[in-house]
Length: 474
Image (cartoon, rainbow, N blue to C red; front, side, top):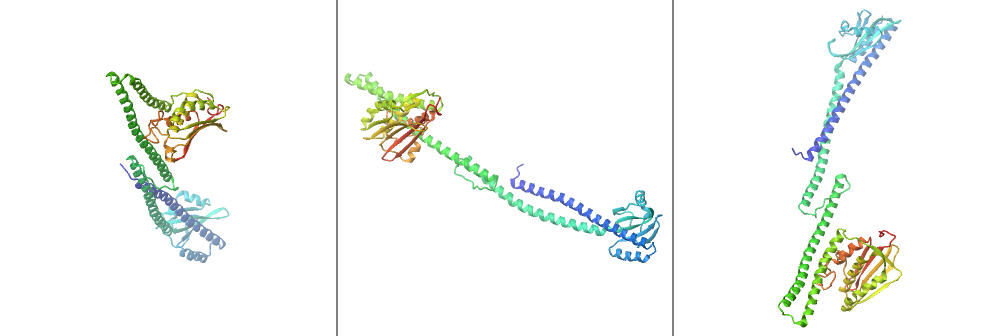
């Protein structure tokens, strides 16, 4: 059976209040009753002792004293009787005193000089009374005693009035508790309901929902955690959506890139088979087929490289490398491509600078970035620099190309992303995988890579790799 949180809170709060007040009321009622009867018996005992002192002083002959006490005590609704050692009534203010109905224990106590008190008695008197029985002892000899009685009615009225006050107080407290409990339960119930509705919205794919939060209590902390979770989910979904869009774009690009070389290769094969290509053009056709085949191989290799690097299947074999020599090799390999676009490559590095890295993978990193610089620079310059820093070795690749804005800089590391989709003439990194591989390889070297760029001015890649005796050490 489903019970709403509101009713659970109400039931728990009211139950606690009711049980607490019942216990307190019972204890307080018992205390008040005990207090009233103790005061009454103490009062009777005090009057009895005063009467016995006065009649001892008057040698039991002053009826006038007894009568005056009778008048005073009668105003307080107290009756008394004097009796001798044989329980014969000597003097009484009018109350029927059934001394013969006292039990053996009570007589034994009174004869031994002990005071007997009974807080409530309903059997031996005409009405319910509280009575005190005091012994009268002369020279250590029991000669009689005095019995003082007071109706219970007055004491019970006091106790009843106190109980009524307790009942009223309990009802008021219960009403206040019920009101406060209802307010708090409704407040918390609404907050939990908001959480439930927000969770349902997230489950249906709405990641824009947010819950008002504060520092009030744990539910507020839960709301903060929920908002943080939804924010991360929203970012993740945006990344997934962007990745899916890039994947679709990549598949379209790959399909286009595959179709073009395959069509070319197929045309050349058909031409050769049907002798449609002259002998003078056969060499040129075969070279074209070879170039297109290499394009297909590069596409497959880039994808394989990316997946191997991402799944940590690539093992680095690090060694000390003379940096200026490596940069000169990169320049020599790419000078032809740079010249075709009217670019010049310059190398700046001290011959003493060495770098601790995997030679093949570092070469792949530098060629990839340098070819990107060549691709997006016309009639400009490309600088390859190397220098030592406090944390290791720094390599800079700077061009005077078209540059990028901040949004493009954030996206260039994503798989399948190409800064300008229409430009696919670059023979390396043309499918938008190159820079993703570059970043993975730099990370595997325990290094960092940063990019600064200004639209229309140029771009600079900064690679920092640790030295042999630091965290990059094997």
